[in-house]
Image 1 (cartoon, rainbow, N blue to C red):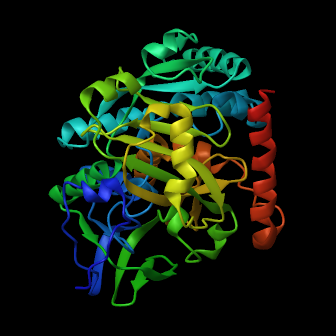
Image 2: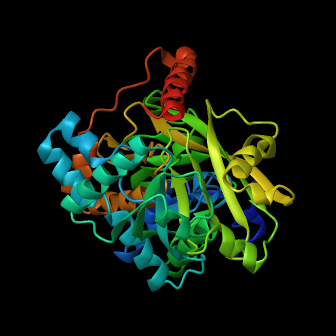
Length: 427
């Protein structure tokens, strides 16, 4: 078996399980075949296995190889476009239905962590930090919006009170979500994979899918084998490539970059993040950061459109970190990496079916940690004949990016430049 490596991330270096599962070899059958062992695929597979289905997961690389094992590890509720946007564009009824589900993903995740004793450095509390008074007013509106949809545990922070949680003077205030939090994302994925295997599920790694054969009994083909199943779930997201041409034009891979410092002393940790909450600012091209389980600062930000790999991640992110925490000037960076997420035009996730027995979910647009876990439950329910909630998402329009593949990157980059300028001007 040829080994397949994770990226050079802090998460891969501190993974609880480094075993590689064997590749698919020969023909197997299952009730459900899941393509992709990230959160969407694992959540779907685990929910179905809990209901007694025989599930096979086929992964091109490693469990959590993509965004699920590279992200900032922040439990952020709702969607990339919030419920008020959904209400304005798709109506009050759709807004109410999606609002009911906007906070469910975090509860699903915590249930899995507790039930299967997943060791992933779960810590409570997440802060949205306002960089200017306009953003603080928007956070006040977010608090009212979320409370209207039943989400409690929110605390508005002034410019003074936010400094009790974040050791910087950059912010005009913030919103503390006590039901947010942060985790070690790769260890969460590995723990969910182990839970699936404990229920009889099978995961094949190092097995890129080369063709999905549609029909009454779809078949998933790799170079060395195939899986015949009653249902197929496509969960490749930003790493799906051109496998399913019907999905490729609907969204665009984008890259984000992350660095991790050497372990910091307890006094410095307390100075930077005394409450040990995670933080993300409210800019369009946002910064996000938190402390790891072993006391490192994990700091991420920036976006590269079209999933271009930056040559020097540290040179991009370190200045952002020092702008927030100048006292880290001499601190060593131990890990730097990039990862891809999938951006949709409307910045809302895309759920749907191809025919009657091939499901897909993709395009979380940077808010995937919680929504992927919700997606898994909804797809599992839909396969079992309870599709009402899944169909709320599936009915949302899924427009392609304008200009096709040639122009979608420059068009999107121009839009990002515009919103970044607005952030800088505070308008």
